[in-house]
Image (cartoon, one colour):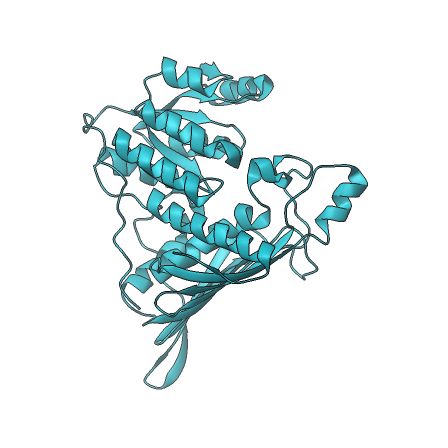
Length: 365
């Protein structure tokens, strides 16, 4: 396997702060944004000084719980009124691009929730804005930050797999549609269903472990045999898929199989698994007991004998995407999960949906 590309950041950071100064953080969107807020608060040199959400009740409740006094129902007002260093954008997907660009133009580094945007075209606009503003974009590909993921990446960096020629990455639910009837099931706000909601995490994890090879073409299918009838029965809006599958071929000859669902007749309540096959070894990372705890194993041979190895978890773990982003900015270091990688994922998602709609393979140029 070729060495994974070096992680870069989109643009130079701000001038380093004094050793005691804290980064001033703002959060836009208080659904997933609450997890962002909690993670920032755990870093000794980050302080969440402002929050924004269009729901006044949510805004008040979160502000009181976490002790944030500056609260805004309009993100633009927050960006104009507060001198922020970092902004997390954790809104419905349709607002990722405009809010990220607004925050960049206000002089902020941005940690954007996944997926990066509604399309690769939007992602390119965001990258151009970051370059113009000389600020960073990081995408919240949070499943890179589990101990098992970091342990596997450490082994991959040592070359344990050899050349990776096949991978399979899945996130399947037996019946688990988020906010059924809400924005997740509306294409105009979400851009898609479980592929863009769940599959995006597993796609990134697989690509990260594979060294982010360049995708060449995609063949895909999507279905909504289970969720759509339920939506009609409950008179709720639902115009996205409930299951998607794709086969991705890369420029280096490797293949990736992707599956994502909110509903399907499987044994597990929730199944997350990423598996790689290499010329020297294979690996798997999967959730345990249908939950959100993970296990990882490497399968290899030594002296002609088959061996199953548990990768050693690195002593210095990155606790969260937010912690990593803050550290990278403070110490002028490259960060992971860059906007450039987010763009590659968006190119894949665009191609998967296009292939599923046409029933034909789609090339990625």
